[in-house]
Length: 386
Ligand code: GLN
Image (cartoon, rainbow, N blue to C red):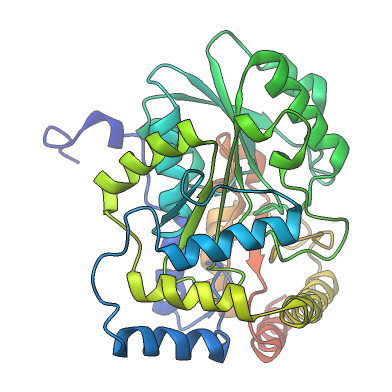
């Protein structure tokens, strides 16, 4: 390919494998268990609120860093859920999805030449986000099948140039919900080396075991944490692109400028709808969402075990990272394409979650944010295939 017209910073990027597999699924008319988006409807109250906001002519730019209503609703949410008291005028930024939240945060907080610790397996955007910031990703590998964070291993990667650690809990793709001792290890290292924690908590309301602990609630972390989340997963609206960033005022100030120059703002009517969702949906909504995900998790997990995959039940989020070495000696990319073409089930090759592809080449990731019927049909197809 002729790269003379393109910027060097893009040369190391490949196409997003997750998004590519959605295209492969379409090509083969396969059930899409690759990209993590629900195939069931969003809550009616959100859909109605979005239509109403448009009818009410909330059709122009909202305040760059988020409408008053959504920031007020977020202040209440963080206090109610986690006891975090926020200044909505100085500590919140609303973005175009958690994806923009992550890259805006890094561009605002990381200098070229800095090192950023990325925990692998990782959600594939983090590496490119670090590179777009001119920084160098340093990978901490969690060993399968436990995928636990080890304090000393993490400490051994810190240098004079380390600036931040990227965390994602509940975790995509491992399904880990990092426990207090693991988060304390990260916090200890952040405090003693003056590092930032950049934490992606987009699955904060989707977990089946343990508890979700925002690292910002750990002693001494609030002032050095950028907390990213959003509504894509909580309200099943991945196409709306409403993300959130919580950060101390000085960081928020820098983040808001980057966000403004990148996108100006997130969709105004959809911010109104999310504010209403936050205000109106109570504990029964969150409990029933988890209950439904638990049923979907069982359906997929049991099907995978029965058809010969090796995997463990995720503690949170909605993915299963499964080892297929009992079923095929092919690499993950080839196996995924065969699975889409011959079994009619699309998954994500495991290597796309690793900097060192060989670490993921006997694994594939299944998403279970799908109707139980969809999952049962997928399992039936896998049964016929193996
Ligand atoms: N987070 C989802 C996944 O891992 C979707 C990501 C995306 O395509 N934006 O599949």
